[in-house]
Structures are given as structure tokens and as C-alpha cells.
Amino acid sequence: MSVCPLCSGQVDARLLAKGRELRLPIVQLIQQTEPNWNPQVGICPNCALQYTTRFIAQRRPTSLHTTTNPPTTFPYYHRAEEIVLSQPDRLPDYATFSGRGVTIAFLDSGYYPHPDLSRLSTWPEPMPEWTRLTSDEWQTKLQQAGSRIVQYVDLTHNREGIGLDQPNLWAGDSDSWHGQMTTVLAAGNGLLSKGLFRGYAPQANILAIKIGRGGGRIPEEDILRGLQWLLHDDQWRRYNVRVLNISVGGDEPEAWQNNAVCQAAEALIAKGVLIAAAAGNRGRAELLAPAQAPSVLTVGGYDDANRRWASTVPAERARLTLYPHNYGVVVGAQGTIHKPELLAPVRWLPAPILPVSPVFRETVAIGHLRTILLAQYEPAPMPTSEAEDVEPTWLQTTWQGVRKGMNAHKWVHPYYQHVDGTSVAVAQVSGVAAQMFEANPNLTVVEARAFLLDTALPFFPQSVAETGHGILQPIKAVAAALRTPNGILAGLPHSATLIHPNELQNWVDQGTVSALANEPVDGQLQAVYFGYYAPQAAAVSLLGSFNDWQPGHLPLQRLSCGWWQIVAFLPQGSHPYRFWIDTGPYTPAVWQPDPENSVRQESGYEQGHSVIVVG
Image (cartoon, rainbow, N blue to C red; front, side, top):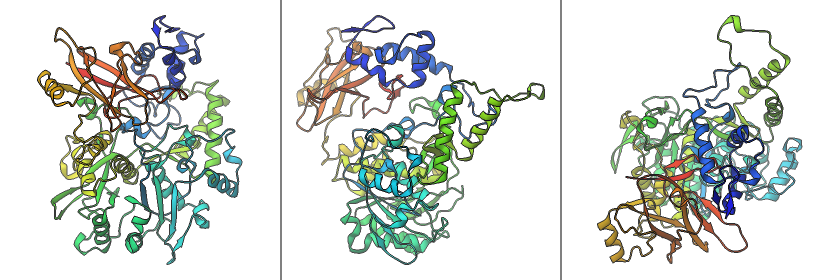
């Protein structure tokens, strides 16, 4: 055991090393009171939680984005957090699964093989000076890295160009941006953000199908052509397409029975492809093809104001607002369907800037200048009266110029900008669907659709007419896919399940569980079932506030399917916890939050802790 340099408490040396994973704002807060402390010497999880709690208390209840001159284009609540939240920060996902082996097809106006779509999780050092690369050098480096775009199909201008060597895949013209955005939102690995801005399916393959007439114009007949290409000779099967993302819409409202795009979409779904389509952004009671097809999963959105929220806290759910997406009612074989059926975050999402564009070079330069200025300048608050409006210094003038440049490009990171719209929302649903099909390759489209809808969080107080089943719940949807009769976890309980004493005895009698930890003698503790899927692990243990964060003290039992499980007995209260996964003697152990528990708590580290509430 080692000693925490801040509280002098005993702590496992391996946990001290996790101090390198602390978020920068927490590091800065600690160093304000402990100037001689360095994250390289480490910190215990309890101290990290204490400083995180202090930091959270410093956040403002309302956004700071309007308090500086000029204001930012996105809300934030602490001076040290002028950034947007990632997808997993907004809606935690079942990160054990990454869409590996699954292909998501896209119908969009154009694409670019962004570094976040490469097969690399980290770029070999030294990192290229991206802004100095020519278009040809970009292409060479990205081809060397290997793209997860398994095929590119250009159906524009009445042609059929197929192949990753098609010139307009690498041209980086304005039509390329939208498809780059949707593919990276669904399947980006966050390479240029060091993993921060990853999508839900960071190892999925991509089939990129370019449609339209240039300038963002995509007539309905071009959407139809893309669907027909997938149907012809079962091209969808050739590329193992399980999910089709459509972030574009048709020309005019029309009954789905009379619409060729809807009919083609229904035919593709019947063959085994889940289609997720954007509802549209006009806030009207109308749906455009293919969003009105009964079997298409139509996705709308909600605005979380770039703020973390807990699904278990009604007051925090009440702060969410509905995005003005299109909506409507259709009737199919399943009966009356309110569309959109599902909602996902729709504003302030981080998406990559087109690398070969002048904007990319400008935003990188803005990032460098911003870092230099913030090291020596505290941006002045917005004047509240004319009397306070003093002559600006050269630093203030420079800062205002930087801010204006940020705002012009919706800057949130040297390589990323914030985006919005139902195109953004549907890409997240497509990423989660890819996770589900990786978790259970035998899953049918009907099952996948049902699990996505049945596990959704109802959106109150708005009516079902505009919210459908409610908010996407990535963790619960994937957990459900794992437990179908042909799933690898069929018949097993969900992790973080509270167990009644009589039920526990039944589980033991039936052989469901046999590993009991710290079994109580007085009956005052609550039995809780925990599990973790890690077929390649050598050992898995449970650690948290209830055992002073000691790896190895609560070992899980391995089942033949690769699931590890334990029943632990915990006192009343709220307990942060994680799993400690040991993969062998030659690789360091990792600690991970519970992939099956969507209740998370900020920990001070890049990933939050899972939380179980007893009593």
C-alpha cells in the first residue's frame, strides 16, 4: 500500500497512478490549494471526489456564455469548462461494445475519411502538423492509417462510381462536410481529441453512399436511388450492413403507402436492415420520406443546454427542452405510430471540422492563440452599464478578435465545432444500434427496434405526439440485446440489481449465483448483484467507497460465457464504484464504470464513477 500525498491515507499504488487521468479543471483546483502537488505523484479516489464536489459547487446555475464580450455560441457553467460535452458525457453508453464487425451505411451529400474514422485509436508519434499538410499528403497519411470506410459509392450525376480511390471522396468540397459529420458522430473514435469526442460505435465499419445534386440539394428520387442500390443484388448483405442512417428528407409530405422512398425503405427493413431517419428541423406536423415509413425508426431531439443531468433526478429532467423537430402520426401493420419514436441530444454536439478546408487551418490557429492568451489574461466580464465600458487594452482587443473567430466557426476545440439538428440526433441512435448488433449478431430488426423503444426514458411533460417513447437510453438498449433467448447473457440478471432476501435464496438454490461477498450476520445490509462482461479478462474485482477502493478485495466469479458476477452486501447510502479488470501479467489493469448502470457521478477523472443507491 502507498500513501495519498494529500490526505495521507493508505491507497493502492495502482490507484495513485490513476492521478494522470484527472480532468484538467480538477488538477487546477487542487493546485490552487496544494501548489506543490503534481498529478504524476497521484491522488486517492476519495480526495479526487472531494475536490470534484468542490468544483461542482462552483458551477453557475445559469450559463456564462453571455457574460463575456463577445459571448460564446454555446452555453457553459464554469470558467474552466468552456467546452461542450461528449456523447458519453450526455448519455452514458455500454462502452464494452463499439460496433466492431458491424457496418453502418449512410445516405448523405458527401464524405471525407476523417482521422476519427481511421482504424488507429492513437496516432503514432510524432503527431503530424495537420495544418501544414496538402490535400495529397492528407490522403497519403489517412490511407496509411487505414479507414473504416469499407466502400464509397458515388451515385451523383447519373453515375455509379465505386471505390475508395474516387477523387471526390478526398476533395473535401463543401458537400463533404455533412456526411463527414454524421459518420463521425455515429462511429468516430475521437482520435484528434485523444478519445474525448468519440461516438457510440468507434470501431464500426462505414458504407458511404453519396447522393444529391451539389450544394446540399438532395431530391427525393436521389434518396430512392441510394435505397435501390442497397437492395440491388443484396448489396447491403455484401457489406454486412445492419444499420442505415438517413439524415436527409424527401420533397413533400405524402402518404407512405404512395411514396416510392418509403416503400423501398420498408423493403430493405424486411430484409434485415434497421433504418434510422431524421425527423426534420421545421417544427411542423409533417413528415417527409422516409421518416413517415412505419418501420423506419424516426428520430427527433431534445436540448440539454450542454449540462450534465441525471435521469433519476426529476428536477434535472425537467430542465430539458424539446427541439422543434417535425412530427406526425402514421398507421401501419403495427397500428398507430407517433413519430418521432425516439429522441436523442440534438444541440451543442462536437463534430469535426473538414480537415482539408481553410476553416480547419483557421480554427487550429485560433486554438493556439486562445491558449496563449488565457495563460496571461482573464477575459473581462460583459459591462453591465455604459459607465463600466472602458477603453479596451490590446489584450482585450485581441481576445475579442479570437472570440469572434471562434463564434464564426462554432469553435469548441482546435479540430471540432458544435453542431445541431435531427441529423445529429439520428447518428447517435445509429451508433447505439451498431453496438446492439455487435453485442448480439443474431438480433433481428424487430427486436432491435423494440429494445430501443421499450428502454427509452419518457419525456415529460410533453405529449407522446411529439416525443414518442422518449429519450434514447444506450446502456439499457444494449443490455436488453444481450439478454434475448439467443444472447450471450440470456437469463442473467442486470448488474447493479438490488436483491430481496427471499429472491437471493432462490437465486442461490437455482444456481444463478454462488459467489457471495462480505455476507452479513445481522441482516442489516442490502444484497446487490454486480456483473461485468469481460471474456478476455484474467480477473475482475469490485471496488468502491464501500471497501475503500481496494482492488482485488471483492473478486468476481467468471462464468463460461465471459460474464463475471458477484453478490455484495452494502449498507444504506449512495456508493460510487467501479470494476478493476486485470487482463494478464504484461498489461496494466484498468478500472471501468459499470457498463450496465446508467447512473454516473463525476469522479474527477476522465470517466465518472458508477453509483448504486441502497435504502
